[in-house]
Image (cartoon, rainbow, N blue to C red; front, side, top):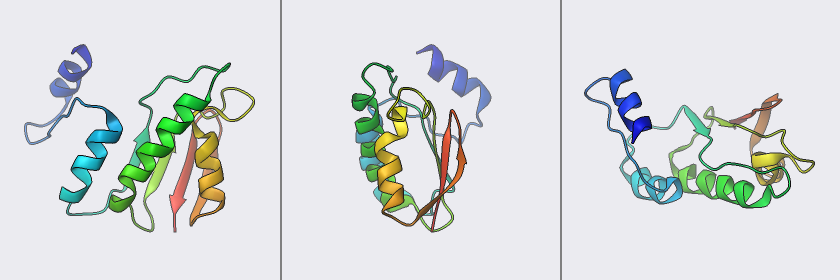
Length: 116
């Protein structure tokens, strides 16, 4: 609970903080979001270089859960994308973005895409 207390101390009183599984929370919240998301930053699941697939799968599930709230111009960032030979957390998102309407804005330890 330290992280929620830290966040609470840095946010306005009108900010709603949620502690939940990120995929479940995004699925539950997206129908109630009344304006498109400008920035979606994904960093909820640790990645292990020797086994990056569980984290990569989790991050594509987050993206798919949030997809209804995204629009052209939305920016998606994934941390730990340069870990492991296959691309860390963003390995599946790399494939998704290459087949969808997204362009890479930054490709380093973090990877950032913009939706078209």
